[in-house]
Amino acid sequence: MRFNPASKRIVLPALLGVFVVLSVYIARHFTATAPHVLSTESGSTRLKSASDTPFPISSPVRIRPKTITSAVPTDWENNWMRLVSEPDTPQRTAEMTKALEQLASSDPADALTIAMQESDAKLREALLQGVLRGWGSLDPSAAADWARSEDTIDHGLAMASVMNGAVKHPDQAIQLTASLSQRDPAQIQSYGQYLVFALTRVGDFSAAADFAVKGAPDIRPNWVVMAYYNWAVKQQDVAVAAALKLTDPSAQLTAFRAAISGWAHSDPKTLVDTAENFPEGQDRKFALTAGLRSWIEKDPAAAADWISHHEYTPEMDAALEE
Image (cartoon, rainbow, N blue to C red; front, top):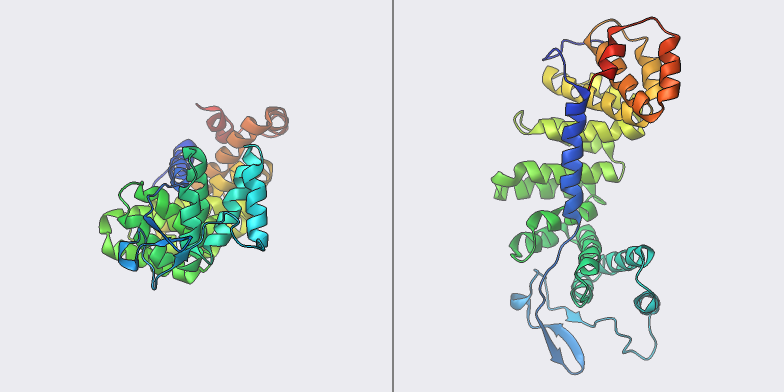
């Protein structure tokens, strides 16, 4: 298990730092706010017209906010009214967000209206996250167009939520990313990060990795780190094997070390035991250092016991370095 690395050493904290920064940045891109334009007609509420809507629709959509005005409330309405009447708790917020995501997957206009009627800003943002995920699963192009054209919200917040819904249909999500990148080249890096993060979030690691390594050399490193790190957290051997199959030396090195870092995070003991059998060289040194460092942080007593029963190696010192 060897290859010629492009550089002699990539320190684990630096690689992990890249991933953490990316994850925090993208995690913040899961909520959004937006205005709405409404009018009243015959006791019901609807959008003024297709041309006046704050989001694109293919035909006029009548809006009936779920305020239980019908004689026989639907199951969705009954559930919503139950949630609205409950005390404010994290569980309630999660259930309300899920309910609006479900509604938006068939009626995004109604779901968006309901979310925007919430007066509490924090809850409104959580609800909009669900709306955009649901809308993204139904019509990702329309949802993305709305997110890009809306000036009152951070475009990144909206786009990340849209992409998290769009990946329910991976091919469409990849096509959407390509289209957005062509229309807005300055945001190619961000669009790719949203896609890769969303794909790994739903467990489609192979698709995320494939997309990441096909990126241009100047923009793909962050994508590759994110894809292979997350993959290895869940499927260590598979991620490492996939990384080693890459033919581009630079991409292979980045992917391999990202996978090793993910493995170190999820199961450092197994990584250390496995890396002992690696051939001498930079691969073995990096894997042992990463594994020991993570193991010492998670279970110092067990790591110390392992070290005491093994011959001294430079990796042991490297693992203890700041």
